[in-house]
Length: 496
Ligand code: BES
Ligand code: ZN
Ligand code: ZN
View 1 (tube, rainbow, N blue to C red):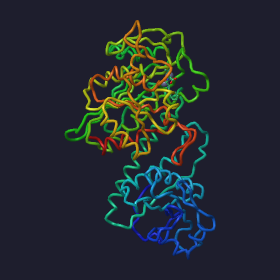
View 2 (cartoon, helix red, strand yellow; view 1 turned 180 degrees about the horizontal axis):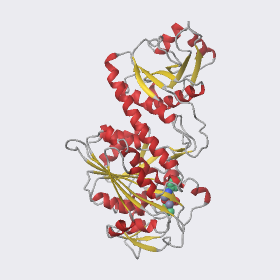
View 3 (cartoon, protein in one colour; view 1 turned 135 degrees about the vertical axis):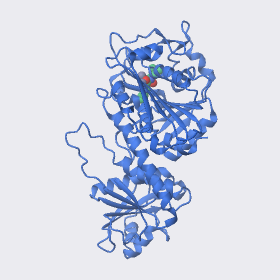
View 4 (cartoon, helix red, strand yellow; view 1 turned 180 degrees about the vertical axis):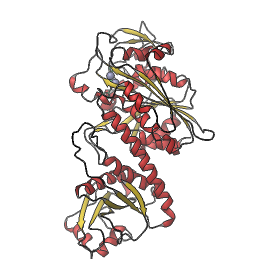
């Protein structure tokens, strides 16, 4: 799918499908839709009225133009209530356009930079969101199919921009949209690949040879030398050995900030000896979603060119059931010297992150952000569309929450409640790896805090949004690749 900017009169452009907007069930007098309606002799308004088309978000109406304009079909795309308009509406719209185009086999599509006519968001942002919607909406995980069902591909998409002074902005949006979609698709691929093939070493291979990124991979002997006892404890039961991944990007010129990103990379979470029930284990190949987000981001970072230095860390491991598996009651010593009584081997993510966080802190970053599919409790609390955010620096958390509202990857802050710290007390070790019956997402974050030192830090529990069985227009069933877009947006623009 190639994107370009179209400045010519939209009624004359050669295209298989022309897409126009509609808000609130009305065709605005200054809109593209109005222009088309005139050319079609009022046909558009007639259909809308007759069929009571309301133009809700995700709603579309396909109209045959019978040769009255050069495009054979016009697609009216509902953008819903003007007051509730945001970039997520555009992204979902983009996904919908791509799906309709596929259905009618339209290889050339021309569309407005939806929402660019309002001043809520810039033309750059709107164009980016359309591109994201269309690219992510046509994502398809096919490597394991004998014959891909989705052979049809949209070739060319032109984004309308009659205002010549805005061409640069739209182009920038297209470029950004293409990049973040590429990073997100890579993350989705890594996650959707079954754990039999996406082992820790295989994951580390995906992190090697990324453009403009230096990657180092540490294997068992080196991990032992570093005394990452918590991480090794998780990995010890698996036939597939662990791999610790370190990625580094440096901008040209003096970096504004140094950032450390840490992603949980459990390639399969069986629960270990505290084994999961079958139903809960089904999707556990997605327990490296956060690692995939970090790798997905690093895969595009040299083209995003943020003016910050970025380190990425993944302590990849498989949590397997075996005679050599770590047992409930075992005590491990983490790299920072703290001992942990492992009472539940299914609370393994925090053990791998404990060592990854301490290792990351040695780079002395300005900000540390870790992400993890860490707790089922988070899905209970916030559902599938919100990730939890906690941390020790409100300004950092506010930046990330704001970014999430732009990208549609919503974050909701939970308290890092001191009151619950005592839940992690063990009589025979410095910590235990589980809290009590309640607030599991918070006690997990309190556990992680023990390994971040005095650095500014935020923790994101992405257990809900990392996977979907009820996909939006720009998603497909399975991995969502959540957080690649937000990290890109944060690093490129909103970082303070
Ligand atoms: N990977 C799971 C968390 C998870 C659950 C992610 C559902 C996505 C969907 C994690 O390792 C885990 O098993 N956590 C336990 C912690 C408990 C033993 C304290 C959980 O949430 O049950
Ligand atoms: Zn687990
Ligand atoms: Zn897990």
